[in-house]
Image 1: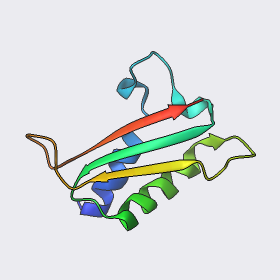
Image 2: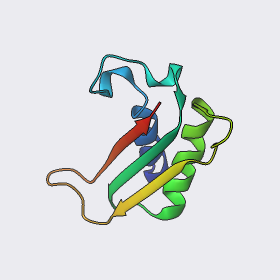
Image 3: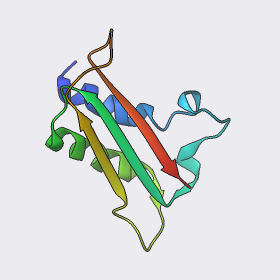
Length: 90
């Protein structure tokens, strides 16, 4: 497993219904805006690749297709190498 595929895996996991706080399937909704907060050893280019793959799987409102925000923190959470927090408005 490569590091890049691990980052892409984090982004794809964000859409899984089992990863949601509410009982819903986010891949079936239209998004207004999305925010990704990444912790650990992740570069801006790797985050952009992950967002590119993520945006292929979701539907954004027609007037705000580039509504992604990225937050990077180089300090990993205790006990794991990297994490992703996904916040969205749909």
